[in-house]
Image (cartoon, rainbow, N blue to C red; front, top):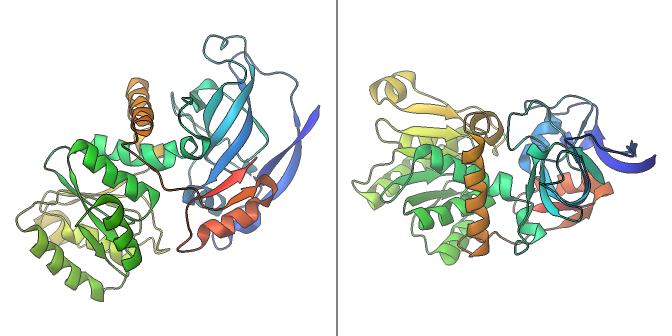
Amino acid sequence: MTKVREISYSRFDIDNPEDVYKVSHVSLPDSVGDREVLVRMSVAMVHPCDIGCSSGLVNGVNLPAVGGFEGIGIVEKIGSKLTQKFSPGQRVHVCATHIFGSWKEWLGVWRDYVILPPESLIPVPDDVEDDVAAQIFVNILTPLAMIKEMKLGTGDVVLQTAAGSVVGKVMIQLGQIFGFETINIVRRQETADEIIDLYGSNRVYVHDGTSSAEERLHKKIRNDIGDISIKYAIDAVSGEVGRFCLRMLDSGGVVYYYGALSGDPIVSVDIVTDLCRHNKTVKGWSIQETWLRSVSDSTKQACVDEIWKFLSNKTIVLPPIGDKFPLEEARQAVIASKKPHKKGKIMLVC
């Protein structure tokens, strides 16, 4: 059997998740099962959720595990029952979880080759480049799925934190497509200026993560938007910023918490005022645990088709990829991905 590389880990480390990774050499089977596809990986993303996995914070990761949530590869072998669906040489998006059907176990993609069921693969159109296609699950499907669940449309308003992230920038573009408005919270004025220049948005505000910023911003945003109602908010930061989202909601509003980029996973909730008197709802949300498990395969496919259309006609444009690392330097790639103010997402070249 041929020996191939994979980036594996056999323990979790919440303080130094980059330290758990090692380059392993494993045997590649000579054949695949009837409903399996052998894919030679080309590139793979390094996402915050990948760090969450090696920290022990993501469900479905059983040790020992292989890192990596999504990437792009080339089909090399196809099971006998899948020859009508895939072909050798075909470019596919590869996901560590089942995009279609139901998934139970994480199958990481930071490796030379991966054998997966068809539910984890999406054929990639010729006009979408690898650097873009490799991000569709985390950075595009996540905000698209949220707005579908919220049923956002013309005239609606959503407040979002981490607006300078790729997910945040995609959310702004989705607002331009579907007609809803975004109120965008960022941590630095430089990021605010970038968003204004890129998207022409005049609803961009800086929250530095301190409690002193909350009162000032609350008054400014309310003064700017007047009687406009904020019924939805999405937060990937947590801590003081996450608390601010809850406060900004109007009565009956819902805040989706889907991350804790601040490193502080605690959001203070006033049970009496926020939840009882004002009937606000706090909702934990993840693309894997919340959305994939709750919608039909036809709904998922419709969203994927929509994403390819947006990318093809350039109504959604992703920021350029930042630094690229060879597969064996996955640890350095994770360290780079944790740095603040980096220029673009980090990618592994397999």
